[in-house]
Length: 193
Image (cartoon, rainbow, N blue to C red; front, top):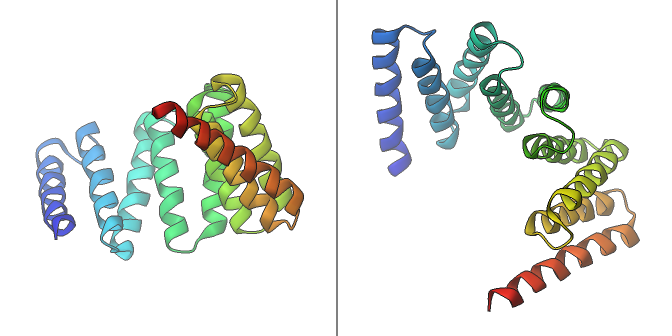
């Protein structure tokens, strides 16, 4: 399929850039990340993981711990860890990403809020429900402050909190958040007409 065709191109681009620029060149780093993502897309996780880990190691060494590209690479590595059921590593990296984004950007910067959502989701997966709720509520409040009550991202935050509260068996709170999400989506649909 198309993913396999793309994989061939990503492999070729990585090999060529590594040969021409060396492994430590920014273009080669991008090709490494692209190849790792393509391998992940076709389910070749055993090949994707060492490449992604090497990519992260090089980002940290060459760009520094707090560089935006390093943070993106950390995020992608955390997601790959989740795909191979290394959830403790996933959470550890997402916690590190969130802490760095809070420090470097702010608590209400969009990238920080996305990191909050990622971490809250995985806290829910591993039944750290109090942590998931706290982070989900913090993100919801920040998104409302940034975007207003009726934004589709706010609806997504309500939906995620509904799921977390449902998992925590707080069905009243779950229903409140699911209802709020649905109401925003219905208003969004109505305004599109």
